[in-house]
Length: 352
Image (cartoon, rainbow, N blue to C red):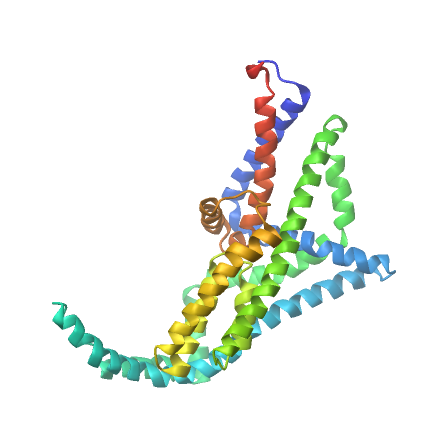
């Protein structure tokens, strides 16, 4: 079979991609912080470039962009604190009452259907008081004990937390020179197809990220307003957290749903809370799936819902939480590569 030069180039790059995937699988724990830093550098590099274009020194521009990103991430994490600080005391008080109510109402109904189920409210209350009434010293002691048990995990977590901003700084600082060095490695004869491939990938990722940011902002406004209209005291933190967390497909929505259900159950202590959450989050899911995502993001990444779930599971297995974050962008690049390989395959001499 005689292949043309572009076809041989495409096959060569496919071999490189397979080799890279093998190395990624073998060295996943080592590569995780570097891959995460590379993705963040790709997203934040335009902001650094915009500052340097205004004659801001590059070092200062990189530090400013990285600091603002860190503050934004910290603000997102701090949204959970008012939820926990308000819900944990209520949870400690309400769980025994809910267990007693469930035992008084649910047990007779199950018994009428031949299912014997009896809850022990006293034991549940003792369990709740043991684990939710601990003071700060007890929590610190538990954390230190867990750190001794899983010392390697904690050490790796702290190491990645320190390594990630350092790697991100150097990537952002040397972004242009790194791009030039990478481009110099491409043979001159292959630069035209490789350049077209990279331009298509950059266009797809840019459209995906911009559309996703618009979806996140719109959903944050919707969930905050809808929960506030439903009478939730924690509507703003839960709504903003849910809207921003949808960047992690399925996982973010699930976390927001759990927090909202917990808040509704503890605040209203009736079926109104779960029903209101079901209505709000059901409408939010319909809004995201049928209005926002098709209009603002569309089918740009070319993946069906089943393939999205598979990508999330596969990358999560390889790289953990970082893999979940980069699953869809990397899959989008894979779609572009697959299209070009398919075109090269159909244009080969086998079909002439």
